[in-house]
Image (cartoon, rainbow, N blue to C red; front, side, top):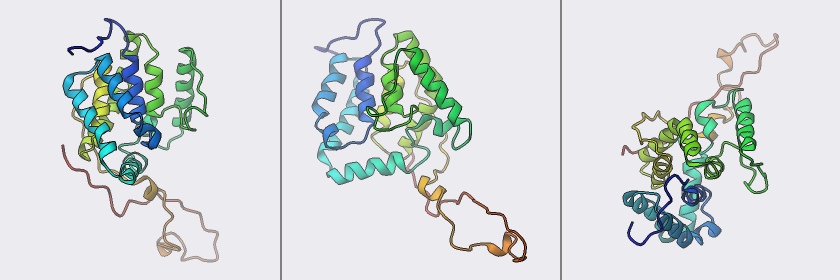
Amino acid sequence: MSGAIQTKAGATPAYSLRALARMLTYPDQSLRELVPDLQKVLTDEAALSPARLRGLSMLLGSWLDMDVMEVEQGYVELFDRGRATSLHLFEHVHGDSRDRGPAMIDLVKTYEQGGLLLDPDKIGGELPDYLPVVLEFASTLPVDQMQAFMGEISHILNAIHAALLKRRSLYAHVLAAVLELGQQPVENVDVPEDEDMDAAWAEPEAFAGCTSKGQQSPDQPQPIQIVRRTASNPQRGASA
């Protein structure tokens, strides 16, 4: 890029990774005030292709052009309500299974082996597998280790990217940029119909379905049954 500071050969694009991590956090007023700084970091480090930088600029610009409530509510609807677009990586691998706990412990050990200790106060109480936290860690690694690390999670990044494309979200540019910095290909991934995370664990209607669950024998002890309910209004994603 003409006039930009070029990333040294073999150096991790640390500032770009940290900028992308910040762009994936909740777009409150403090983050929107950083738009010029984020633009400058991404441009000066020159670690991304011009096309990718244009996409990121579109997202940053939308934060300033759109209504504040629309920006913030859109983020919540996108990342906090749908499983396919969740920024918690183990949600895509382990879901709600018991394997998620041990995987989280292993990830924390990986951070500690890299010389980093998580400060809960600095990450807003987020879990270790929160993508912005993961990217902050990746930014501290030597370039070869960073690329290897990104290769291990590239299938998850591609899944989130595909889900964001399906929703025609400008945030897809951020995931594509992360893959590009990690020297990982952007791949086509089939995106299953998403399930609203709130509706997934919603309480069933009072006494719904009692006659089919053994209540024909009221004098006998009855088991408590907790059933995942299918969302009545699944999110509709537009194909890319």
